Structure formats: structure tokens, C-alpha cells
Image (cartoon, rainbow, N blue to C red):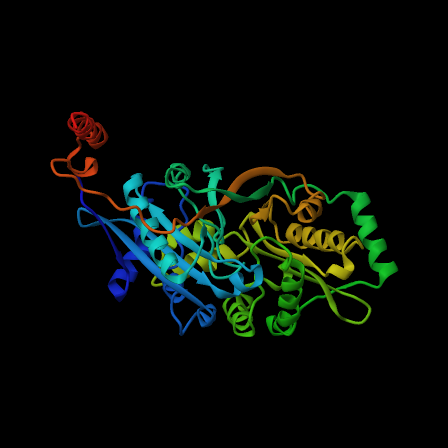
Length: 418
């Protein structure tokens, strides 16, 4: 039987192996979108990721007869545990061959660390913040995911079920076929214009990215307000906000960022979309250089027909006051003008009926479902008790339970004589 071992990925070569393992695992899959290896490495560097100022992480690699066969990141988010008064250890970056022994050893390693930390629950897939990838794909394996989500094989759900994980909550994703090939509903368009006039709303227009960047802080303040009550969301620290602003805002198309302000020029709602980069990331194969950057540049140019919806939020004070309708109408205008045809939404909580309501303006198809799992951590790892003459079933393939029953029967037979 193959020998399975687990090691913490501490060296640079081990961490590169951790990041590159999925590219081998999914080499024959037409639906896997590899992330940029440089960004994945940066996520676990204190110099690059400010989330590690208040979090800890360990990376585990599983080997099967000396070859990498699985990986798992275990994350202690003190911010999340403080907010929810919980003792959770998160896991993410999980990938494994279809072998429950491999995945089991990885989760055993995570649970061992969780017990050292005094944690009670293992939950995931999740990252450091609410802007990291979340949820394991459980339905909708036949299409390319967005670059902000995981892809995994269907057997992953079975691996987690075998280990004792159960559903915590689901996220769903909509596909909007013919999003820009059809007119926005005339009645909704007229209502959006009426709302703007009556309530004094104004949709910002940006001539340069520098102008857009001036509003970045207000957008993130709105994000924390709008998402603050959602399951698992944690507020972003100032360094985390700065990190995301520097990482993403310089690259967004200013025409695909919609910000609505009130009559006092306060941001009260936002909607951010980007051309799909999924196919470009596939072609880049995890590298920006030498050719990856060319694929990304081409994907940002006119001609891309797929638009990915990333984030949408409305101030609590302005909910049910038409802001969402104005945002949807304005995004449709820009997307149609830029030649997009299909829209795809990133994951949204199945229980977040407000955001589902905001999607009602579009013809939508539910095409993917993701799941966050949870499992209570056992007080200690079960110990294997060795009896003379009884080998491990896992080690030698014999039926250890039947041999144990035979031994117990013999002991009872001897003791009955006295």
C-alpha cells in the first residue's frame, strides 16, 4: 500500500510545489483556471499580505510514495473569531487526488494544529478576508469559473463527507445570458431616471483612473457597511484596504465602476465589474512573464464578450430607495456600449435575498453552487491500540476487527473457567 506522509511547507521550494500542485492535478481539465503563482505566494508572505498582521497560516503538503498528492492551507483568523465569538480554524487552498487517505491526513494535520490553538471547529474553504476565494464547487462543473473563485473536481465533496464535514452554508452564482444583447426593461429604465431626479442621486463619471482612485476609500467603507452582516464577513483593516486598492483599482476599467452619490456627494452605492480574465489566466498558466501579461492585456481590450460582476453594495440607509436599480441600469448601458454579451455573477450567499432581489432586473440562470463546510474538532486524535498478533488493517490489508473479536472471544472462554 502506498505510503502517505504530510509535511508543513516551510521552504521556498516546498511553497512553490504547494502553489503548482493544482496545475498538475488539473492538467487534463478544460475548466480549471490557474491563478498567478506570484500572487499565491504573496498571499502567505508577511511582507505582501497585511492580513497576516492579525492571522496565522500553515501550509501542508501530502506526499504519496514521495510524490505530491495533496495540499491544504490552515488559517487562524483572529478578526473573524473575535467578531463571531468563535473558535474556528479556517481551511482553504485545498486540493487532493481522489484518495480519502490523502485528504484525511491533510485534515488530520490541520486538526492537530487547531487543538494546539484551542480551536473547536474546522471550516472552509475560506481565506483571510471576505474578498478571498470561498466555497467548494458542488454543482456546475462544466464551465470556466471566474478568477475570483475555486474550481475543483466533483469527488471533493465525497472526500470531505468521508472525513465528517457537513454543510455550513451555500453560495450560488448566476449566469446572465444575452445580458447586453437585450434592452434593459423600459419600465425599469424609466423608473431609474425618475429615482435619480426625485432623490438627487448622481452617477459619477471618471475621465482618468486617478479620479476613480480618489473614491476608493469610500467604496471600501461602503463594502464593510453593506457586507458587514453577511455570514463570515470580517471588516477590512486600513492596511488591507490599501493592499486591495493598490492591487486591483489601477487595473479596473473606469467605465465598469459605477458609484452613486447623494445630494451631499456621499457615496451610497457601488457596482464593480471586469472583463472576464478566465481564459487569459488559463493561457498564462500561472505566469505573468514572458507571455502571460500579453494574454491579460488582450482580455482587457475590446472584443471580450463576457463580463464578470465582482462587487455590488448599497448603504444600509439607502436600501429599498432605488439605488440598486440605478446601478443596474447604468452598468447595462456601459456594458452594451463596450460590446459585452454575457454577464456572470461571483458567488452570493443563498440566504442573501436582498442581493438576489437586486439581480431581478436581469434574465438569470443559476449555473453554479459552492459550499462552505464545517466540522467539530475531536478533543484528540484517535489512537491505534496494538494487540499482540493483530496488525493494522490499513497496513496489511487484513480484517483487524474480526481478529480482535476472536481474541476477545478467547479471553472470555478462558475466564469462564474460573
